[in-house]
Length: 377
Image (cartoon, rainbow, N blue to C red; front, side, top):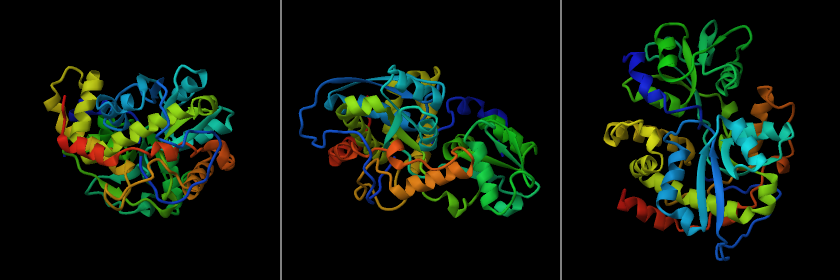
């Protein structure tokens, strides 16, 4: 097993974060959008704020690829990209008007609405729950029940890692208050060091966080999530209520360009990362692109596994960004169970699918053709 020291450089670029489609019907929330892709697009300038201070091979690079390929320009969108220190800061930015749109955890959005913040989710980005419990391959821990008397390393007691790990323990039939101890261990090299050094017996991280470690040759044994976690949604586009009311058409066109970029990424993850380097050269920290590309492509593929449907092929997938009522119910049940919400909110207060018909009116075949043509930087 590789040592923790080998991970320092790789883990520094990522922070906690985790798109897809569903063919089921969804509820229609508030807001208005132009349902016709044929309507004349008025030029618009939008600012997207990334909910992290660091850029990683995830939705950031899908956004970059779509911009570099001219997909936003095709929609009449001049796109500015900024960073914020976490989801709360990005939500405050869109409410204040210093940004127009962001991507945050669906649960964070619901909690913000419950706390009186006038924001609304408008389109899904990550559809498969990304959190997992893992341990070393030689551990005697085989299921959640085996965690009794053990210590689980979480990113921090203020991160989504902590309520997830507690819910995992409880769903496994244990008492998270007395049967298991939770210790903050961070991510990357720090988390691996705690696991290898015996300070903890298992980790509670998100998929891409594990991938950064695995890129150094480390292997993990993953525990299966209980059924309770089925259907819980993750990263989701979010705007202010004012933006949905007054600038819905531009937001719909933004989402259309992004989802076209997601199709490109699904077909060609490597080119997506390369376009990400072009848009965000700071991610390389002075390193040559070829020295980072292989590992970053692995991380990009791990993110795509959480963002794309689990069944079917790219040719089959449609209805990008839709979230079913059942998925929102599962998400809110999780928030209530983990004491992040006192009770489930009316769906219309949290979610509007009013832009998704127009957001899906793009040429998927053209995106696939672009991807097959490869990186043109």
